[in-house]
Image (tube, rainbow, N blue to C red):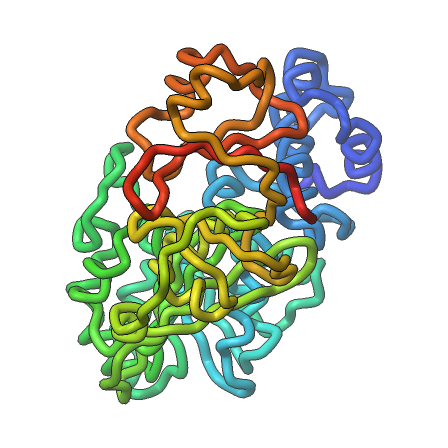
Length: 394
């Protein structure tokens, strides 16, 4: 951490240049003797990455930005707020894999104390500095192995352990939970000796049912999306819980929160009708589909499903609060009809339960991307391929 970057004249320079392409700054000459042009470019790049993901950081004075990879891997403020609401006041939390400390800073707003463990000494120093700038005074940063730190604590001495295992090992992606670092599967018994609750953040690519087979005493699984993009899975393990886990599809959008809570057994037992396209079409948010709430969402919002394997829904009256995109159906074509009579040189194309991918459809039917028309290539209740022409309803 180059503390010269925090000098007022340097901070003012970064503020004046923060809208520029960082490569322009990197290739230029630094006006400061003790700060390189690449360091200045790194701070500008950090601000540009933080401005949407971490606006509190971006618009607070004297924030120091770490290496690009640390900003890429950290949580957003939106998802950190979800974790914050799970913490009881007055508790102690250990963040085993601290990183840039976004989650730690938000957990600290509820906890009595948060210990941020980070092997990278430079990053640990950056997090401690930024926490002070943000007024987070109950965050203790320790440059140490988080697992070793937890193991050294007295039994039942912690309220929560938060862990975000790395999905990259020796620069290669791993896909099995036990191959992540730290190995949460092997560590969970020791963690339960030390803490009541384990909060485990996992990649949105992780298979939920597989993870549930390997993680013990899971009370809740949160599937979190932000503006239509699935960002993370959060598994809440409670050492005293032995029931069926709740699955929460959590949709964060336009400063709103929408959630659908169910269990795998409820989803399995739900019975719904499959119906032909009616007046409105609904394409569920990725949090709903990743959570596997295919029948639950239909029952909860009183809409019909097009086909057992077609995750599109329909109704005769508009359901304004449906968790996903809502469309007004203009017309429905059988696939032979579409081939003969369609005239869509430009449209937004989607394929759901259809044998061709979007790019293959565009190429075959010569449809350019864009415009106000939406074409859903899908399967109807009778198993026939159809094309639904629609426009946005909301």
